[in-house]
Every structure is written in C-alpha cells, then in structure tokens.
Image (tube, rainbow, N blue to C red):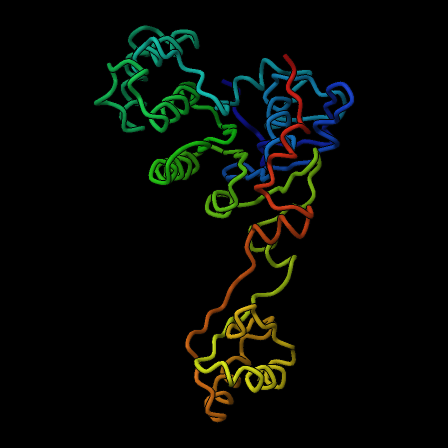
Length: 330
C-alpha cells in the first residue's frame, strides 16, 4: 500500500457534478487534516454522497479536483483506492453468507492468503463485537450488527482514510453510541475519517471540524464551537417564581447586562443574550436584593440546529424537499 506523505488526508477544490439539469455538487471545497474526524453535515439530497463518490473514484467530477494524500482522484485512481475504505449508506455484505464468510471473501479479493484472511476475519469480528455471531447467517442480524460488519469489511486493508457515509442511519440510540465509540477508536489507531451525516448531534460529538453543505455547496466550515459562535453568543434563561415579578426582572436584566430580555409565551421564562459571563453574578445579587426569586436558571449555548437554520434558512431535518435535489446515476 502507498504510504501517505502529506498532512492533508483529503483536498477538494471546486468539485462539480451535474446530473441532467441538477447540479448535485456545485463547487465543493474541502481540506481534511490527517488523523482527524471531519464531518460533512447536511440534509438528504444536499450533495454529500455524490461528493464522497467523486473523492472515492466512484464518480468522475465534471470539474474541479480531488486529492487523497496528494494523489489525484482522476489521474491516480489506482493509488487512491489503496488509501481509502468506503462504507456507504447501505450494507454491501452478502446476506446469504455468515459474517465470517463475508470477511473471508473480501480478504481474499484484496489479495490476502487463506491463512491471512482467516486471521484478519477473526481479528475484525473480535474488534467489532461479532465473534459470537460469526457463523450466523446475516438474515438473523440486527441493523446495527450489519452496519458494524460492513464497517469491518471496509477496514480489511487498514486504509489510512475511511469514508463513512451516514453510518448510523436507522440505528437505535444504543447501537449509534457503539458506532461512535468505534469511529473514535479508528482515529486513535491512526486512521482519518470523513463522516457524512444528517444528525447534528453526531457531528457535534465526533467531528474535529465540520463542513455544512446545502444544495451542493459548502455554506460554512469550522469547529462545532466556531460554527455555534458564528450565530450568536450563549443565552441566559431565567424563570421567576412569581410571574408578577416578570416586568421588574426584565428591567433589572437590562440594567445589569445591557441587553433586553425576551419573554417566552408562557410569560414566566426570560431569555437574554449573554455576552459577558462575569456580569451574571451582579445580576443575581441585584435580583435577590429586589426580592425576586428564581425558579430556575440555565445558560444555553447555540446548537448546531440553530447554526444550520441560520445559515441555510431551513432546519437540517427538512429532508422532504431536499430529497429531490441530488440525483444518483443509474
């Protein structure tokens, strides 16, 4: 296998892919540093899978360039394919075979001897917690077990860059958590992961950096904290014990924090931007001196949901209208 020789695991410059009249990918730029998890966040139809397919040499870009550890995906596909593993949205395993038979076949196709294939299959089954189910037919596997096996198959050649295209779609919360742990372990053991997802919490939990993609374009990029900060500061949320004190509390907040608080529809919860955390202590002392008692108080940081809504004008889960934006060739 060709060894990577650059700090950048992946670079994409102006990638474009058009299907008929639909520009599924419309000038995507990405830079993924080696040894990190890079999240590509967007709804169904945003262009995530098409971008992955171009970078994995499965689709030829109409324009733009892509490089994997410095190797061009169009001019050097044979080298690129040695450096990557791809796990798509749907399992590529053969459901008529057992987990062990699937991994043995994939290993043999990748050039391992029978002994090497047997050793590799046993190691991966153990790594992904599938040893006890190794000889069961896949038709008896749960969705999470199939996803883990599919990921195991993509790691047979131990690629330095792994594409995970929505790896937890359709999984229950417990299995999603197990997949998250597996992804973190991949990075700890030296791999780079490019993760596409429509789950905001998944990107927040796993990704060192995140690209927000919508309608085939990267509309924002940065760490989760940078993206959250781009849409505003944290907010202070208060609920007064006696609703009759609400107006007085609003006036005190304006004096203490220098901002106007917003009143919730139930007329008891107050939300105010919090630009200076040091002033919160003064606010609480003033409220106590005024005899205003609080039922609860919290500080709310902006969420990735708010980031996506602010940047794109629609929530990330708005997939129904987005689903027709990205066409996949037959």
